[in-house]
Structure formats: structure tokens, C-alpha cells
Amino acid sequence: MSADGFFDVFQRVKGKTKNDPPAGAKPMSVTELTRIIDKAIKSGVPGSVLVQGEISNTRDRQASGHCYFTLKDAGACISCVMWRDAAAQLPFKLQDGVEMIAAGRVTVYAPQGKYQLSVQTLQPVGHGALELAFRQLQAKLAAQGLFAPERKKPLPAYPTRLVMVTSRSTAGLADMLKVLRRFPWLKLMLYHVAVQGEGSGEKIADAIDHLNRHGQSIGGVDVILLARGGGSLEDLWAFNEEAVALAVAASKIPVVTGIGHEIDCCIVDLVADYHAHTPTEAAQIITQHWKKAGEQLGYSHTRLRRGQFAMVQESAARLAAIVRHEIFRRPLDRLRALGQLLDDRQRAASLGLHGRLRSARQRFTLLQPRLRLAARSWLGMRAARLDAFDGRLQALSPQAVLRRGYTMTTLKKTGQILRAAADLKPGDRLLTRFADGQAESVVHDSRQLSLFE
Image 1 (cartoon, helix red, strand yellow):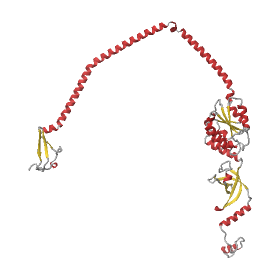
Image 2 (cartoon, rainbow, N blue to C red; image 1 turned 135 degrees about the horizontal axis):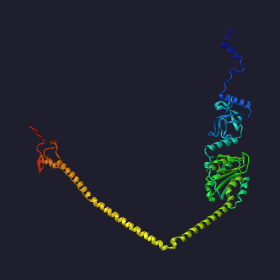
Image 3 (cartoon, rainbow, N blue to C red; image 1 turned 90 degrees about the vertical axis):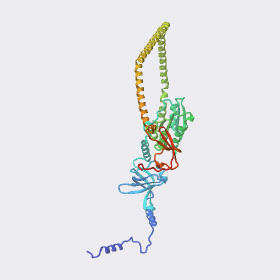
Image 4 (tube, rainbow, N blue to C red; image 1 turned 180 degrees about the horizontal axis):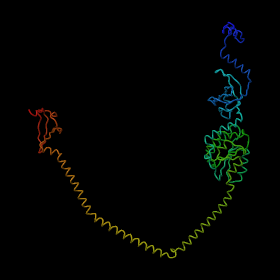
């Protein structure tokens, strides 16, 4: 074993390293190093990459409009940013745990000294972006109770004022008119809106809101038919926007939807008061009772005639019974019988009244001595109590005290009763009251002599 120490060997190895900076090299700044790394990444990584991974640490739609998240797999993760313009094009909301394919380019974020993926587009793995957006909005509105059957409004049985909210060029309008024109008494109105393309969802929502606020100005609206012909998911996407669903849910006018073909189902179909699978079916649902109105009118006419005939027969039978009644055959007999009954009732009432008066008089005669005795007893008790009170008052009377040899002295000027010699001063004029009169005196010396001097 060599006698060289560890540090000696380390120095020899270090001296042989080829990547050592040249002697006398000037150190670079952090910014300069970061730029070199950025250039190295850009030169070594393709300008656009596709990366698949699971989204986590989502910060969706910040105040700036940018989205920040992380893409990860079992072995690594990378920070991602989606700038405002690209984020605004996302039809769905970012959620942690969703597998995505991100398209973008690798950049260096110098303030934090890290590389990141600047994402231009996101595509969910396993299903499309619009399908994911549909599922997210469906779950959100279901949690708010907008699909609940109890909140749906009933359709009028015989509506007469119908507004079709659709485009005048759509095939759905022609399909509805084929059905509705069979009933010429219906008042049909078209509210033309774009049902496809950018901004169409907002226009549909505004149309429904406008009809609810100003429908009375056109004579009122019984039902709104929201319809259009078939198409792809992208073509029908206006009817999957949250603004349209909320407008239908808030509508006070019943809304019937007929969108696309039988296999199509949009968010607005789930919120509407009735979901028809096609525009033709929507028109048929609205007019289903009108189809049978003539037949129902015939039935009603027949029932009305039968009811009137039965009523006339019953009235005739009652009239015949009245005519045959004894009162019409011998009216005076009935009047005499009633007069006799009245006399009997009057006589019975008079006898009863006299009997009650006689009984009351007898009871009063029996009670009169007892009342007198009770009154004398009560008056005697009251007189005795009064005498007792008078005796007690006489015993406590000041006059009685004076009669026992006592006197009461007061100051003549103020009438103050004197209770002690200390209350006197020379020159005070006094009045001394006796049982049989009073005497006046003047104080010359207020000092009190000792009782046994």
C-alpha cells in the first residue's frame, strides 16, 4: 500500500481534470450562466415537444389569466406554464389527477433558475377536450340541482303563443314548421340567433333572457322552443355552454329543447323543462293535445248534451212532484194548520212564562226573611268593628293625653313642637296647650334646672 495520503491522491486526480477553467479565467455572472444553459437547452431540445403526464399542483386562471401546473409521471416531473392567450382557448378546467398530452416548448425561467414547459395546447388522454369540458360542467350543474325533476315547469296543455329560438337557416326550423303549420290558430314567432360558432352560446342566452323580460310586449309567450338540426359535438357546443344552461334554468317561461338527432344530448337538454330528441319531436310535444282537441271537443259536446238532458228531466220531475203536492191542491188547509200550530205555540209560551214568574215570586218570598237577617247580622258586625276602632282612636288621641295632665308647647312664630330645652333661646314666645285651653309665655333663661336642686 502506498504511503501517500488521501489528500495527496486527491490533488493528483484533480490536477488531471480536463474541465478545469483556464488559469486566470474571469468568473461569469449568474445571468450569463443562465443564458448559456438556456441556449444549450434550446439547441439540444426540439422547438416543439409532446409530453404526456398527470396534472398536479394546478393554479388555474390566475388574476393575470395564466395557468400554472406540473406534469408528472412515476419517475420525474416538470413545471408548466400556459400563457393567457393559450389558456383562454381551453374549453375545460384544469384538474389534478387528469392525464394530459401537452404540446409546447422547453424554456428557462431565469428568476428562479429552473427550466419549464411553456404549453400551447392540452389534450386529455382517452377522450377529447370538449368531452372533458362537458363532463365537468355536467357535474357542476348537477351539484347545483339544475337537473332535478322537481324544479322543471309543467308545459301548458294548449299553448297558442310559441317562440322558436333558432337560426332562420337551420334545418330544425323547417322541421318544426312542418308540424306547427298544421294548427293555423297558433301564433308562431321566430327569434333568430346564431346556433353555431364563436359567441353563439352568449347570443342564445341573451335571447332567452330577453323573452322573459319583454315577452309581454308581444302579447306573452306560452312556450320557448330551443332547437337546431344535427351536427358534430363541436357544431352543437353552443348548447353545452354554462351561460345557456343558466339562462334556461332561470327562465320563467317553459323551455322545450329539440337539438340534433336522437343520439345527441346537450347540457341544455338536461336543464330544460322538456327534452325532445329532435326539433320535429319538440313541435309534436307542444301540439300533442291540439291533435286530439277536435275529438275531445266532440266528447265534451256529447257529455254536455247528456248532462243538460238529464238536468231538464230531473227538473221536470221535481216540478211535477211540486205540482202534485198537497199545498198546491188545498193551500188554505195548510195555512189553517200553520195558524193553529202558531196559536198552540203561543199558548204554551204564555203558560210557561207565567209558571216561571210564579216560581220566582215564591222563591223570593222564602228568601226575604233570610236576606233581612243576614243584613242585620252584617250591619251589627260592622258597627261593632267601628266602635272598636273609635275606642282605639280615642285612646291614642292627643286630647286624651292632655286630659291626663300633660301639656304640649310650641313656638308661637313657627308652630314647631318643642321636645327639648336645647331647642329654646331667650326671647322665644311660646304657646302651651292644656286640656282646657292654652297659655302664652316668654323664655328668659333656657337653662334647665336639675330635677333635685
